[in-house]
Picture 1 (cartoon, rainbow, N blue to C red):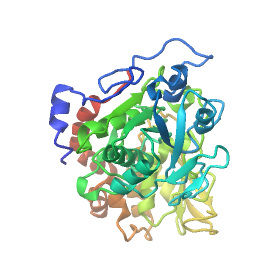
Picture 2 (cartoon, rainbow, N blue to C red):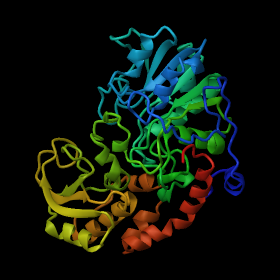
Picture 3 (spheres, rainbow, N blue to C red):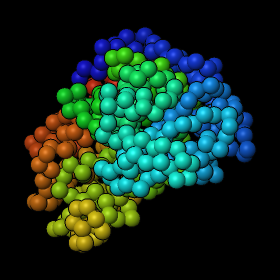
Amino acid sequence: MNLSRRSLLAAGTGAVAATAASSPALAASGTSSTGDTGRTGGHRLRTGFERLVADGYAALDGERVGIVTNPTGVTREVRHIVDVMHADERVDLVAVFGPEHGFRGTAQAGGSEGRYDDPATGLPVYDTYQKSGQALADIFTDAAVDTVVFDIQDAGARFYTYIWTLYDCMVAAELAGKRFVVLDRPNPVTGRAAQGPVLHKEFATFVGREPIAQAHGMTVAELARLFNGEFLERPVELGTMPMSGWRREEFYDASGLPWVPPSPNMPTPETALVYAGTCLFEGTNLSEGRGTTRPFELLGAEGIDRRWAEAANELGLPGVHFREAYFAPTFSKFQGKTVGGVQLHVHDREAFDAVATGIGLLVTAKRQWSGFTWRPDQWIDKLTGSTRVRTMIDAGAGADEVVAAWQGELAVFRAVRRAYLMYR
């Protein structure tokens, strides 16, 4: 697994790639946030956007600003930050860039809103979905912005595509000669440790551009620093606005922030907790719970019965129990049909390992249900980042054996990752 040309330097010396920031209000790559022990407005944690506003938008002073965001870009009073910025004469917001699902969130998976003028603000909204490189750089140029700002809530998994929207926008901003600023938000499933296999570069897609772990354990600002230091051929002029008061061991409910679904099938922080493991069922013919009220917590297919839950519970996976469950998806796989399967019940989220749980469920599903198949496009390889998981399970490997197989590459990634972390 070849992480990058700069990995060994970063892992061996703890060096941090240089980040350019034209305002002292922005954290450079070497800046570490020690946390804010005081409370502002009754809240210990302040997001990057809250700190930006508190500083009077000094980091964006004199700049024509465009922002990459979606419905999660809200204040704790659930006002969208675009509406807030547009109404504030201290910042010159001139454009919005919408990712998958759109800026206002009107599109389902695999869709976007296209180019339009936002009815609420009159601002031009540009569609970035499935655009990268020079095509995306041309959009930034046409929008006539000086600085591109990014503020989107992540879910903590490599294949959650907003982090690759971040990556693509960083590449395009450098091509267009624009400054790039990331406003940080919490990783909802903590930033304690990276888990899972590391993507092999030959499997790069929009669900994984670069070799990071399946559960990366980083915030979006930390990922931006990692991308800039390890993967971008020409680093962008990058600034980050860190949070204050966030601690790596905290789950989302400790933040005091409202949860806005970052995509239609990520309705709660509990969904994000299991997503890095159970999203692997997108690579199979089983339902991953899309079209139900508990996506990624409900898994199943026609012909599955109680024996799958029994087999999964026998694995003794930490922090989780499995219940025999039956459901009828309203869309996606098995639409309108009643299927059998399992529901995950996480009873100890500190001990729970989403990726190892996902592997255990794949292994037991294949053994218990004769109808099990992988998607014919080998989507599982794109999700896991190599052929290893699929071929080992097909060869009869157990869950522990599969998990053990990626520990070497994970250790390398963890060492590189450490240099880019911004919080205790």
